[in-house]
Image (cartoon, rainbow, N blue to C red; front, side, top):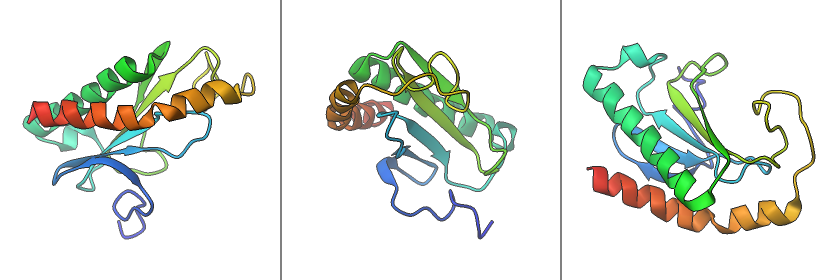
Length: 142
């Protein structure tokens, strides 16, 4: 557990944090708006959580998805919880666009194209609005 990068993060771009979980923007140049929802306690699986805690976690994942759809207008949202490399419960919430580097493949699939720098810049310019939208949804859910 001492080596867990999610237990001991550095340089996270946090949008929200409380005693149960945190929401961060992932540094990935080809995917502006890529978020991760991380459970604070070091557990590996959803079933390690109580029903109330798993409901809270999924409510936050869905709030992040909703904000991404509203602000960035992606073609699709990918939700993933693997933990094969880092067995600490977290969800990837990834806005996908028809022109992103891997679409329609998963991020971890074969690269399909180089992204358009103008469109990437437009999406990056909306990140402050995304941060505000996520924060507003989480504040309203309390």
